[in-house]
Length: 303
Image 1: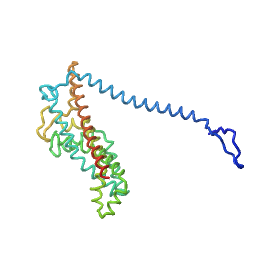
Image 2: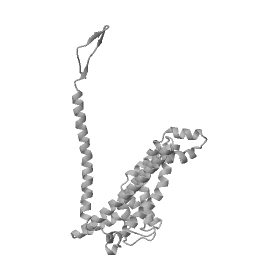
Image 3: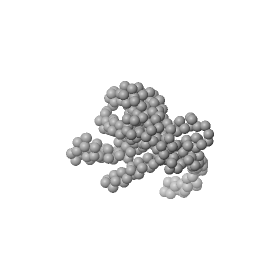
Image 4: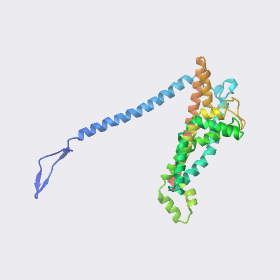
């Protein structure tokens, strides 16, 4: 970087420069401004695309969203059985996957070292994350529906989806646990607590916001899946009475509505179903974020 040094004064044999101005400062400021506008444009593009999609779906579904559509049975053109089936599938999948995922993440961060077995376990988790969802559906159809005799049911779909979302829960929880300072663990151990007590009463409560985030991501994955659900849960339009009944989720209902649509009225019902699906995801995400924020505030107050 070239410097322009103005005439200097001599003070006690030392040269004291009056002013040093880098020549390329203006170029740096111009580059910063250009990069800022590029990043702002990227953010605006993302928000604009999302807003356009939401506005388009809402506009197409506006004339079809009513109480009869939301609370009616399938024979009446409603989606209540599909919404209930979706809630059942999401709840059952999380009940099955969360304990296994959290315990695995705790083992990898707090107990496991860098042995060959641990490396194989991490490779298995990464492999699970990269398997296409249709393969999970085929596995669930063979193992849970046929070998275990569940048939096409909510519990078969929940077992299949719980395996599919395990990598998401493990990775997110593991990163949340890694952010907990070692001083928390050292302070607990110095007070006489065991390692298990430290994990239970210090580490996991501190990592709870991250665990909630993993649950949010897992919910979004379960709600948006169609291939594994189609093969394991089924396409029945009836109201499920238990998790051992077959059913049809909102994504499968949306698929069949668009597949069988003939006139614009059918497409309008499909867009209304898509709007309900988006609203359901927004409600779940908002509720979990509020809960996570409350936990953060309590944790900050306790510290």
